[in-house]
Amino acid sequence: MLVDNCVAGDLPLSVSMYSSREDPATVLRALRSIGRALESLNGTVDVIVNGEIGLAHALAGAMGTIEQPYSVWFLPLADKAHAWNQFMSCIARPASAYVFVDGYVELETPAIRSLVEGLAVDPKKLAATGAPLSGRSAARIARQMKSTGGLHGNLFAISASFAAELRRIGFRIPLGVYRGDSLLCAVASLGGNLQPRKWEPSERIAFVDEARWSHRSLRWWRLPDLKAQFRRWQRQQQGLMEDAAFSARLDRDGLPFEALPSTVEQLVVEWAKDFPLESRALFARSPGAKRAFARLQAGRDWALASVPPRLVATSLVAPSVVNVGR
Image 1: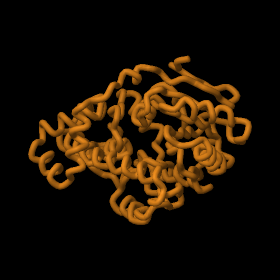
Image 2 (image 1 turned 60 degrees about the vertical axis):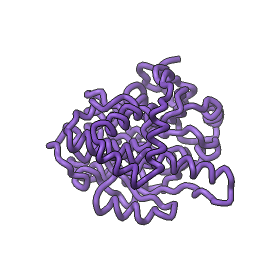
Image 3 (image 1 turned 120 degrees about the horizontal axis):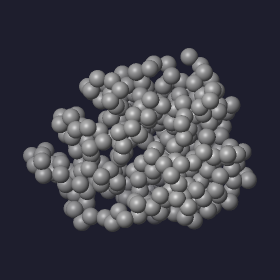
């Protein structure tokens, strides 16, 4: 089935990019790669900047240098989970499929077309993911996703029907969650309310080897990169608890997808309380996870989550926008 049959009609393909800490040059390179990957496809591009208004203004000011039309949105809360939630609930337009890209990755030219074709070839597929090219673990991650299923947060897509169901039930990624892609993977693997609720990741998530992307790897001799690597390691330790909580709540308990706690603090603290043997075993294996648990117990101010997205600038001819704060 040709992807043109899916996106050449009344509904365009939706591409959204998420950025916070990246410098403008990095995000602009990523945007140009999206333009190349869209080729002749009928698609819209939304850049969601969370927490860095300077970056949002820089991307708005660079519109004349990018051939691909796009919109820039700003959210004051620096949290990717919140940014994704706001895109799906407030910004996303009706589309034939939804593609999600991180602001620091560069797509290979066939990436988007291949990803959407991976969704279109089988109606059972609720999501599609591709193959990373950068990093020491890239090949291992690709093999694992290909053999057992999975979703990579740098680049993935979900079907229009899956997106519609997530919106219908009011699904939200808990604020502060690091592994939002793992949560979406779990929901899709369990059928997303569209198919029988049983764990079938390989049947419901398409691995598309031609959908490839790369990014600049961190360099151990640069102090900023060392700091970034340490922050990533801390988030990964938190992610161990998140994955355990997702598995316990959604797979074993059968919790409705929309009934997850609203914040990562609630998610993890409630999991540790309800599954004490499991949580103690995890903390014994990973002292870093135990320290991450202590940090989460201190809490975080989520007040900015009530501020709606603001459209900073657009080069689209007539953007269709709903529920947007100014």
